[in-house]
Length: 406
Image 1: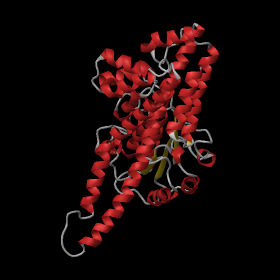
Image 2 (image 1 turned 60 degrees about the vertical axis):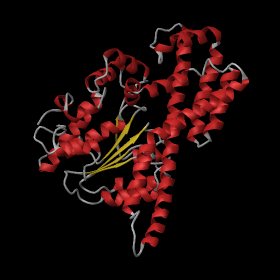
Image 3 (image 1 turned 135 degrees about the vertical axis):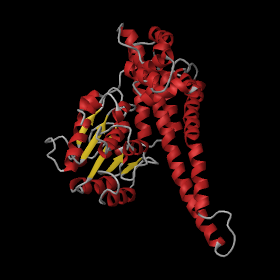
Image 4 (image 1 turned 180 degrees about the vertical axis):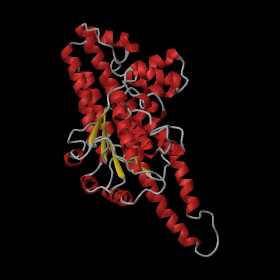
């Protein structure tokens, strides 16, 4: 069996960018888990039943969790985590029978959904080595859902592993009682050279574009890929970064706010439109749409009720996508004001938006440090308001008004 250091060079671990410490920990745990399955004595303390992956957006929390799930299921002698066997491929793609991936459709994970998940987790694995439950955005658990999960984590089935992902391990994000029963895997923001290498080698992006995307993505791997390959993603970023120097008159407050919200809405619609339509057609087919004969009327009523429920879930998913898109725009704005402070201080620290150095330099000469800090605080306050479900247009108008006042 390969060591963790050797595994880090390839297999499923090649998907985990810029996280050598995490890969070493997880590969050692996967090796211990394989020993446990074979009935041999595993390395003491290497493997446990509950894990919490933490780190900033874009650090690859869910990717690391999926890679770990694949390594746990890997049945090849080259493993764990060879990346070539059927278990590895299906676990990474989310289709493995014994790997349950929970991605919140809306702004929270309900207690009913979690109870159903806990019941499924209690069963023995069917085809794999372990039954793995992977919960993305575990910070979205409601209090009831967290309590339902806690009971399963406290008394886990013998061959079940829980993998939770959250932006941080702060008690406000993840229940303290759950966190205390998990082994925490902290992920850091990947460095730009590591991201550029992935874009070049795995995605075939031209070196110059890869380096630019890696330098402006804020350490967010998915964002870097979008900037490198999607012109619309680049255009949206340009629109966002035009806001700080574009609010000259009071009427610009409302224009800029509407523009930011509309950008987020259009991105959310574009991200979910194809999936929504496919789900509707699949449900209509399953409910016998277009059928004739006895029972058709009752089936139609049932289909209409199911469609309404589906549309409700889709609306919740689109709302979440809009909030996420808007939050990403706010992160870009916060990065711009941080760059202005860096330039005013005369620091040689790298800029978040090096390609907008001319704009941030202009702002640095025209604004005081106090006014830049007020603008930055307004961005952070807007993020907090959105997290508390304030209507987006209201929160963003308050932000752009603060940018106008300076």
